[in-house]
Length: 114
Image 1 (spheres, rainbow, N blue to C red):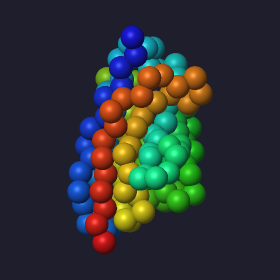
Image 2: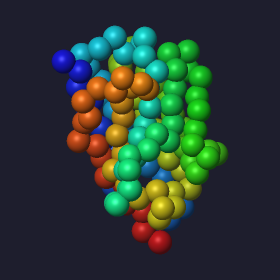
Image 3: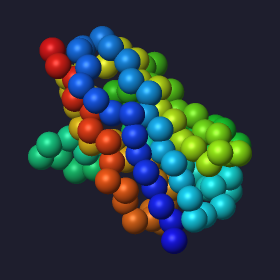
Image 4: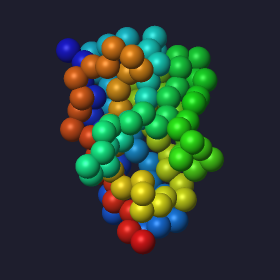
């Protein structure tokens, strides 16, 4: 059974930084493209960053240049370094595969104050 456990969220002032982590178990992590998603209040969940098994990265325009996705295939961890945070980044952040997503974890709340 696939398990996704996100951590690292919190309350931060605009311009601050956070590093999110996702512990993945129950799947052959190294074979899958992975992504960070977020869901802001009243909005649908959206994909904001992805990384392939070969470490090719893509970003949604609103986070490009501020967020960096990375992965550790040995420890089966996915990371999201978030710099220059803005109030509009406030959301619950989730990790999951790209395509054929697994059951969602609980996510981690990121709140950016102005």
